[in-house]
Length: 625
Image (cartoon, rainbow, N blue to C red):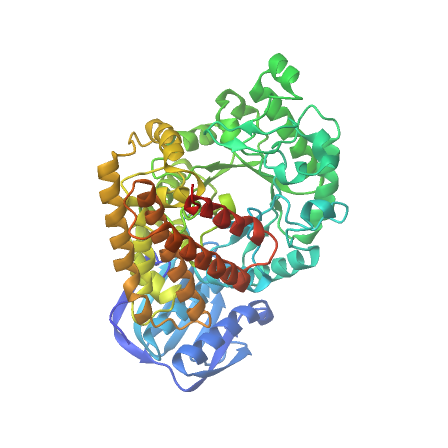
């Protein structure tokens, strides 16, 4: 037993009572419920933890006979709440409902993992701040994880008391009549969605269907038979200065658009037991640039957007679901917010530490529209994350969500520009988001590194938590802070000269910083390379007790190598590279080979060539002439 109790999330009230309790080698896990079978999955998970971490063989039994571990329900207690008592006589978990009982069991499992057979006597009384605590994983920007990976993520999130999960779908569901759209994407099938739904239900997670239904249709519009549905038939420049090469949004002016969505919903939604459906509808920046131009000129852009959104709402309502939708566009037209139906849920998203969840949350609260605050893991377009930004972003979402009565928090992990970050790069954001959304007062200042070691990486050496957080802060070392991304990522994607022009605009509009002079940038890039090398050194001394520990070591080694290579790409363009173009080209080829190998460990082959192709294109910098 150790003195330090590391729990994730930390409970809102924990009182140590000064003694210890040693579990017997054999015992009974007693289900004192009217219907014991309702808690059988919970009991089996706890039974496994007792065996694995305490070497104790416990039989499961219904009834309320004497037993070393007793599970019960108190309907008068808070929903999802629980109490956990460890005394000299044994252990008791009392849930306010079956979900609360499960949360008490996973808390006990964490104590067993860190303390072993001898536990401190204590009383925990706990319940969540937010009734809905979710995670959304992007599976449409090239990387489609395999089923083992998704189920493993769900297991991890459930152990941290997450109770909502979404897979962000653009084109990666195998719609029967639209094979051409998903043929190369290795999509999820209906059978797989049903399996994930069942997996989630056992763990008290609501698996919410998610299909973007307005913007982000570019993967469909690559195919001529869908082009008539698009707002434009050419690419457009986005408001943030990048070029979208393909048509992007469904056009509200096309009569066939809503009927098509209805047919998709009819096929997609029956695979989910959730009462909710996230229809997306974000970033419709091309609205009014093409087929709906006359409508927008006559009615206004906000009105045209809202009318189409309400059409989607009617489709969702007719299919018995409650509609969730991204709130960015409606927030640009605050005068229309009061016209939203009372039975929708707005998803207020923003991914910078300075994002204004306060005033946006106040607007939805004043309108009476239920809403979530939606921060992110800050891992995408970075290679290894943006730790400091992630902490501030999630903190702002949780604090202001509580302040304005948000019904939930949905933490997002995106995969823009090829989903280059490895899966463990999201663990810090997932863990901090789960903890903060459960109980802000107890978790905003949590020792995240220790929590990651104990309950994400299972690292007895205490290496991986600090390493993951530190590598995720490499972006700061460059001195260039680009919103929603990092300089080291962009150095693979465009020449430094172009990045400086584009980056200056981004920086001036948001963080009020500018890209530094050549001399200063050279110094910062060299210092960043040294920082990365120092940060990754302890990796070999980690002692992760996970079956995929060797894989995680390879993933972090690759992320560090890619970051370091990014510094050399910048230095090469500044005339200060430490090695030759030929050597850099050879290293990039090795990076691509390892990237491809690691991809196939956790993800399906669809999308790999597109994502790795971005690495191959980066080799153009090393060509002669």
